[in-house]
Each structure stands twice: as C-alpha cells, then as structure tokens.
Image (spheres, rainbow, N blue to C red):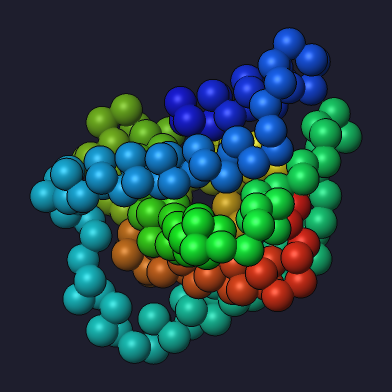
Length: 213
C-alpha cells in the first residue's frame, strides 16, 4: 500500500509539473516493490497456516478453479474501463526501455510479481483477513468461506477501487470471493488469482495493451 501511495504521488507530481521524472521511473520502482513484498511474504511464511499446497491435490476442484481463473481473465479484458473521475492509465510499459537484458529482466520481474507475489499477498489480505474481519473483528474465529452480504459487497467494491480497471476489478473480486465460499480454501483463491494474472500477462505481452498492467 505504501508503494502504491508513493507511485500515485509521483504520478500526481509529474502531471502537475512540480516533478520532472522520466516515463521509465515506475519500471525501475516495480522490482523494488515486488522484491520487498516477496521478501516479507517469505519471512513470515510460517504464519500462513491457511496456505496448504496439498489442497491442490483435489484435482477436480483445482481444475475448476483454474478454469475460473481463465474465465476471470476473459471477463477482465472485456470490461475495459475505469471510473469516470480517474484518468486512463498508460500502464507498465517495458517497451519504453531499449531492447537489452535490463528490459528483459524488468519484464520478467513484472510477470513473476503479478503471478507469484500479488496473488499470495492480495488473497491473504482480501479473502483470509478482510472478508472474515467484516464478519467479526475476531476474524481468526471466523471459518474461511463464511458468508455475509456486508463482507461480500464491501470487499468486492474495495477490490475494484484498488484497480484502475474498476469494473473488471470488481467482477474479479466477486469471483474470487465466490471461489472462497465454494472451496473454503485460500490456496485455491491464490490459484484462481494467479491463473488470471498469468493469462493477463501473456495477453499484454502479445498485444502491447499495456494499460491492463
């Protein structure tokens, strides 16, 4: 959240003219952000008792969740639009860098961050914590997948607001919530999210529609 705030402040400063930063600034900030969050997730890995890889052995559920992640990707690129008050972002654009190993490395870090770091971080926050916290402040006593209309609607809207593609983000938030309710597994929520992000990364790199990033 701090990195996002810094990025937004830099963007506002550049747009208003009191900062003169090159367009490539965010490209160099992203590896720092991804590696920092990834390092924190690894450091506290012993606390994430709800992430159980063995749950993926339930192949029928895993296959269905994988398909759900792909459908979420298709929905994401179909619901192309943000809030009217928000500017349309240019997105993460590695094409602004000259072709070089640095460009390849930064692109690889962007893909790895979106597929390996972001799904774990966001599902731990949205589905493991907030979805249950909005049911009870003693959220650890709330079973994973416990439903309430309030927590469902609030997390869905907030998940949309977190993304520049508001409507797509809100649809994805609702779908990942439903995955949580159906599977009662944070691991499967991470899988659905990771599949969506991987498909989106492949789509962006093949079409150069950078604003999805």
